[in-house]
Length: 633
Image (cartoon, rainbow, N blue to C red; front, side, top):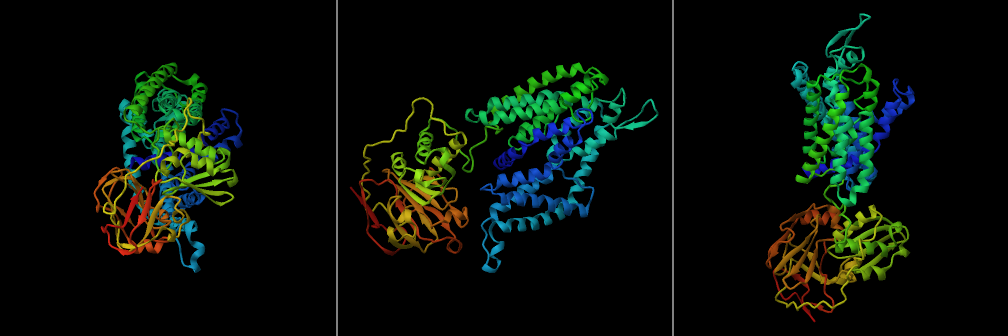
């Protein structure tokens, strides 16, 4: 669940980057500033539609390929949800929470249906075109449920708000806590509306009756302000200090990337009091920190109340409103002292918790789902540096992807790719598909190299620190022979020569010597005593190693990577020790045969050099039978 929340939080980084500019436009366009309505409208155009923007951003971020089709589906999901709910109960306003739900649903549905196929007469609606359709249907059902359930959630909030308004210092602190805690759901607007525009009553000098904390403060009510004052220390000092803590604890390789973002959103919070860009930057990545932030907001509200500070705002609790309303406030300088104190508290608490619990704030996220590893001097990182150079450099590489054994790359000019250099640094072969697409055969460790390359490309592929060079061993690797009794048939099926496997990379031996199997059984077994050295996330291929160091790849079917694990039941894990005959995979043959290019299964010996593989049998064989192959010097 935390991993999923990290993905949601990280998907918000792109839309969050638009918010500081919008906040500044909105604030400077107000009547008490430059009084330029179109500036205010320009900023409000983004902030007022934050839920829709989040729906689009989350859907695109959750999509496995970041495709724009997912973004469109996120927008469709939000529009269907909000419009349908209105017909049931026009008082419901789910706020940003509605956008978050819509983005999650759309992103998950995109990953499920982006490659769905229909009969020819419905072919136009297949693939990515089907995703908005199924999203609209799903959100219609969800809207029907939430239209009747959500009012009960709002009733609970309304009841809590009534208690808060009449509970003195404890009520002020609880209000501050709930004000922050409820931001993800949008329900903070419910209690804000009561406190800011309905709470209390004051008759001004002209006899006008004014209600609400904000209006009463601005009209000169000497009792107004306790429910507003405590926000200034948080927005001007506390959250900017939290940004400093997140920067200080970010991974070294990521500091430059996250530093600019953190500075901009911290300055926006200090100046304008708009803090959502900061809060959404860690709300989902580290829920614990967000809960602590809500507690600290409540504490700041109570401290300001205890020191009898009464200050207020017409827009938000930033430096602009602090200065504009300074003259009508009571004890406003104390807020600066409280703010400095809260800034120290925020920095220390955030810094400690982030490191203590390894919280995944911006710049510290785990490298998941192929999103890269940190740049350094590890062998795979150095290999990535040289591989990028052999591909023509960063300027020639458009996109990097990988499957079980090969890098799949989009390049600007395939002629700039050097096969000689690639092989020098460990590649097994190169296939130029066309002028802009190449495949580099790496072997079963391709995942690690591909992730390292992605990270390096994001950072401009800097040279490794110091004088580190890739140590490419030239000495001959000597493996002991594998006798015919030490290797057993890994599954029921028919043995065919490797040259008959309908895939050029396997058939030409670019991955190594081996043979193919046309499977008839539904289980793959270990062919020898050894261990599992790699298990691919899509479960369609497993790398094994004998106790004597011979590596074998069992690749079930061709292009089965696109099935994303469907049809495979993995029975082992990486690093597990094996005995010959241990089950590795359970297969849904009917599903796999219907959805794969071919079920022919290559069995490849990936690290043989001078050794020769002899295939001793052909035709139908049962799993466990020996005298299938042998290896000789």
